[in-house]
Length: 138
Image (tube, rainbow, N blue to C red; front, side, top):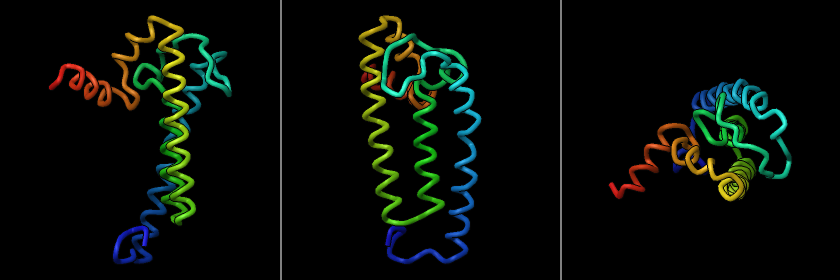
């Protein structure tokens, strides 16, 4: 079983399904906001146009990728199956690969991106704080 040794009851599955539905709605506002802030910098292939550090990018370096990851988790919660588990994990893995490629491109193209990278976490201030503690050896 995916959920553990004892299967969840129908009530538990309905609750997980409903949480997944609610979770799937949360990113929409952030996606629209992010796209509005990106304007001409939005491309299918990672390219370096400019450093966007306003709007949701003030809090997260890659809010669109974070939203896509939330959708992958929500999809699994709404449609729990082994196939959806593998599809969601695959989507998240590929998003991280794309994210790291894009980070490398931005770091090599824009010297000012390093400061932004140091001060803005992938998942917001929590991620940034944890990375700074690691850099300090704490």
